[in-house]
Image (cartoon, rainbow, N blue to C red; front, side, top):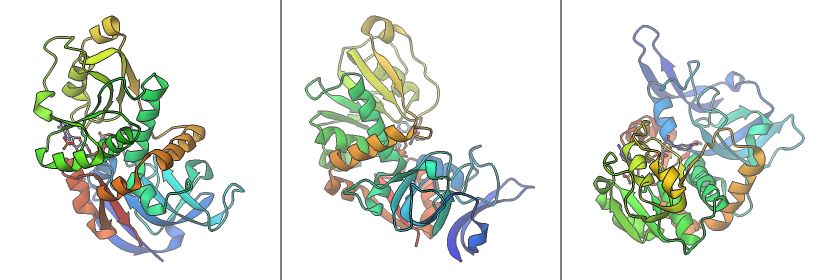
Amino acid sequence: MVNALIVTKDDETGKTQASVERIDDSRLPAGEVTVAVEYSTVNYKDGLCLGPGGGLVRNYPHVPGIDFAGTVEASDDNRYKPGDKVVLTGWRVGEAHWGGYAEKARVKADWLVPLPEGLTTRQAMAVGTAGFTAMLSVLALEDHGLVPGNGPVLVTGAAGGVGSVATAILAKLGHEVAAVTGRPETSDYLTSLGATQIVAREDINETVKRPLESETWAGCIDAVGGAMLARVLGQMKYGASVAAVGLAGGAALPATVVPFLLRGVNLLGIDSVMQPFDNRQRAWARVASDLPLEKLDAMIQPATLADLPALGADILAGKVRGRVVVDVR
Ligand code: NDP
C-alpha cells in the first residue's frame, strides 16, 4: 500500500476533489521502472492538475505531480537497477500519466534521467521542472551567443520558480541580472539570489506603444508572456535573444515584428516536456555545476502531500515564492 494524492472528478458537476488516500500498489500504471518517490514539487501545471485539470488530465481518478526524484525499486530495463537514484520531468507524467504525488511511480525507462553527481533527490526537486526549464533557457541563450559582459539579462516572473532559479544561475555565471517582479516585498530575496536590479512589473507590463525602445537587455528569460514579452522584445539589444518559457501573464503576444527585422532579435521557444535525453543530461549536469546550492536551499518551501490542494491554488494565484519541495513519504 502507498500514500497518494488522488484527484477525482464528479461527472455530473464536473467538479474535482483532491485528497490523500492509501492505495494498493496494483493500481500503479504499467511501465518498465518502478520508483520509490522521495520528493516532488509544485509547478504551475500541477496547480491546474490539482484543480479542474485545465484540459491536461485525460482520465480520473488521477495522481498529479509533473516531476519527481527517488530511488529505483524494480526495473525491466537494463539502463536502471534497484538502488539507482533518478529524476523525472516532463513526458506528460502527472497529466496524461500518473505522476509524482505518491510514494511510488511506474514509468518508461526513456523518461528517466540518472540523478546527476552532487545533487540529492531533495535538491533535484528544489530544482524540479521549473529549475530544469530555467537551465534549458540559459543554455539556449548561451547557444545564441550570450556571454557575461554583454549587459544585463532580464528575468520576468522572477520571484516564481523558473525566475528564481534563472536568477541564481545567471548571477553565478557572472551575468548582471535584472529581475522583474510584481511583488516588491520579494526584492531582498531576489537580491540574495544575485539580482543586481529590480524592475517593477508595472514598469514593463504595458502593451507595445513604440515597436522599438532603447536597447537595454542582452538576454531575457521570460516566464510571463503576454504584453510583457511583447514590450521586452522592443527593448532587446541588437542581436540579443529572448527565451520564451511561460505564460503566467497570458498566452497572447500583442507584438510587432519590427524588433526581429531591425534589430535581429531572436525569440527562442523553450519546451521542457519533450526534450531529448542528451539535452536533458546536459542541462542536469549544468544545474549541478552552475546552481549555487546554498541559494537553492533559500528558495525551498517544504510541504507534504496533504498541503498540495492549497498549494495548487496558491501557484495559480501567483502566490508561491521560489520552490515548493514536497516530501511524499
Ligand atoms: P510560478 O507561479 O512559480 O511563477 C510565475 C511568476 O510569474 C509569479 O511568481 C509572478 O512573479 C509572475 N506572474 C504571475 N502572474 C503574473 C501576471 N499576471 N503578470 C505578470 N507576471 C505574473 O510558476 P513557474 O515559475 O513554475 O512557471 C512560470 C511559467 O513557466 C508558467 O507559465 C509555466 O506554465 C511555465 N513553464 C513552462 C515550461 C516549459 O516547458 N516551457 C516548464 C515550466 C514552467 P512575480 O511575483 O515575481 O512577479
